[in-house]
Length: 487
Image (cartoon, rainbow, N blue to C red; front, side):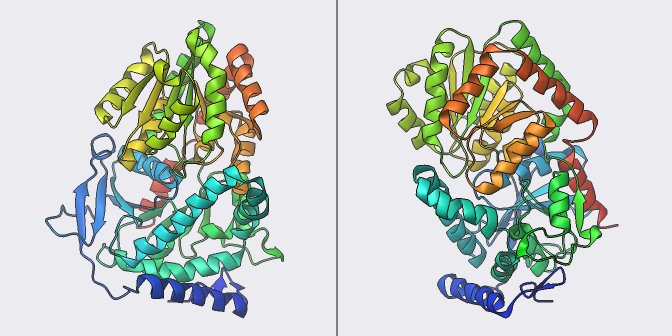
């Protein structure tokens, strides 16, 4: 196989950068071992959370016991990692679309096989990324001098992709006993790269965000993007070797699909938007959904939003959903910090049946007060937000993967420069606000949603228009593309 760390889409990487990439691989191999020749067993089991609604099966590596057979005709692997919640959420969208299209989705999380070099390498990098995210929210100096430049320009460079490609060679062993003819959709670049190194025949690399970065390249796969800006940036590898004009990506390697959204959300866009506007026009409490990401950052900003909404919640003019994911400590800290929060709140903790029942009943029913959600299981922690989207009016979130979802959105300050372009795209598509870069502007936007009608109803109208042009069909298109590669 061609060494993908030396030449990227015909652009030769400088020898110094190649050596750095090789050194990175040696460092990880020395620390975590090199299991490239390991013959790991593969096991198929039902996913406890997502099997019933979405037909999802887990691929488990290096586990004994019986296994269900692979569906070689309709099977589709969704390759992912847990790094924050975003890549899991995009994976859920792909699995949902696959299920709706009659495929059998297999969930393969490369960060879930503890005895493998693959998981050890990914886990180490995930820990560093989560730490950086949290520090960036507490230190303006660190954010300005380290975190923003790294996420904006550092990850943008081809040399970064060179190192990633070399490290991904250590991740390929987990695919050894996976049927090579099964299509793979990677919702993070590492599963896509690892699949290619392992010889998987049909690989789609679903790129998140709206800021083209070489970090996301997996040459040999078909890359999908959610926006036309991303398409143009990736096509010419814009800025990925400083100011150099690079050889472009071949047209067959890049496809615009639209936003990666769950089938259940796309299918119900019109009905859910009509309910939102009816609640507003009838003076019902406005429902806000606050969702904290997998890095556990932004608690201070959450606290400011909650404090501002408390008077309206007491007067039954607002309702608040708070999903702290699998970070119960965040909820405990918020309750300690905000007087009256605990007494006004109904908790839905670690009880998936209760959470699912509440989310379903709230679509057509009345809701008041504050509802807090925490789930220890990672699938439940992430999917909880997806279920609550249908009954909420405004999603309050940083402009990450959630920037592309079809409901009105209030964007908090980003974590990492690459995220800013998600808010820019959403504002231009008319389904979200500008990024609120500080607390006063965040509270101003909350007041606009609460006290005016035009901003909110305009977003609901635009979301319905966006659906008619296929803006939210990206997950379906990615699945069709992956399955079509076999033909």
